[in-house]
Length: 224
Length: 122
Image 1 (cartoon, rainbow over the protein chains, first blue to last red):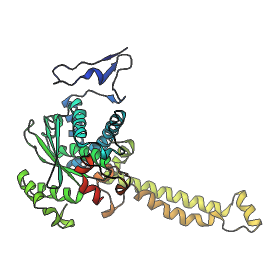
Image 2: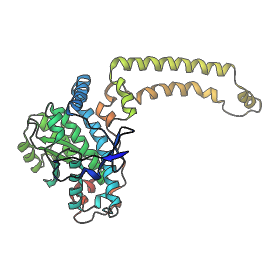
Image 3: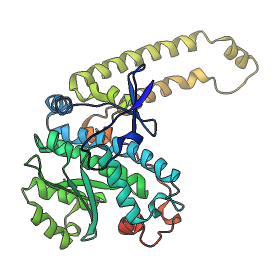
Image 4: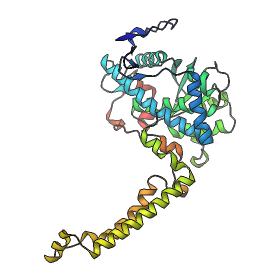
């Protein structure tokens, strides 16, 4: 009754061992028994637009919260997979860095979300996302939707390392195929980044401010 | 992924819905006061028993104050009025529970080294 789905032209990703569909129940599930829905870009955008029309400027906060919940759920799936493969030493934060990067990228590539590169820069973790499906389909239409992916990163990495982190997108707002850049840090750093973005600062200016540790000089009440 | 409780909170974002919630809480409070009054006037069998044997503190005697305190707390836990009211993001943002960071050693060239600064501060 169950059969595997084949993805052609997927650049080496083998869906044979990842998704299976059941014609009798109408279900598609991953190897970790997570149920999958295949949605079109129009569906995602319709959902995002409906939330924005209902909530106005608060749409960013809602997208962030939804992304955060998704990131935490995705981490649970990631952790289960890593533990199955004995890739965890005694805590997820002590997983080998190179292996983590490869697995993290692989998990999101399999979901079609794009490719990811993680680096430390100016004492902040920077995440580069290329070929981001979400940006191409949704957040390039309205930059407030970008908070969904920022929330995802914050939720996933907070669970991974056991410290509450915040995230914000600092590059890739305009063109659908443009690479996106996120900064991931504690909220004392990310809150000033949001204020700089709101004040019209560009990506290079923000990176320069991070390098100069300007966030240490920003009074807490002026951050939001 | 918003859970049911989050969705249930959605109507409270509207001032109109908030007013309705306050009205409902007021009706609840009135009913609670009436019920308390009735219990004081017509104590149930257990209280009559307690009176007879001089047992302390009838529960009904403390009920009016308790009911009065419970009403605003029940409402404010969802929608506090004024500046204390949480933002939509706060309502959606889940509480992340973590183990104490200091108990876990960070291995060399691990994920933790990338986040060492935040782990040590956390």
